[in-house]
Amino acid sequence: MSVIATDTCRIFCQADTVPDAVMMLLASYYVFDLDYLRKYTQCLGFLQQVVIGDAYTGIKSTKFKHFMKKFKSDSE
Image (cartoon, rainbow, N blue to C red; front, side, top):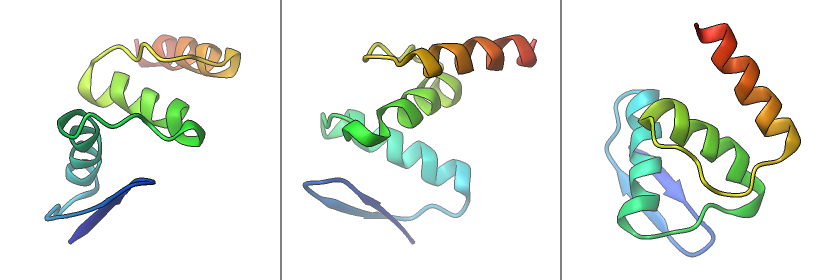
């Protein structure tokens, strides 16, 4: 059992692995048209780009941009 918690709701779902739970988390934001909580935007934006392959279009900090550049170069 996994619990996805936002500032306005809690969603209980079945996820047997961590990758499944992450996918459920990201999918919940899309399905319920929720915005990422401000303090988690950079982390969730990273997961959105890397796990789903969907570019994160929200506001990106300088640290986020630097991290993504390094991550991409290390992944190649």
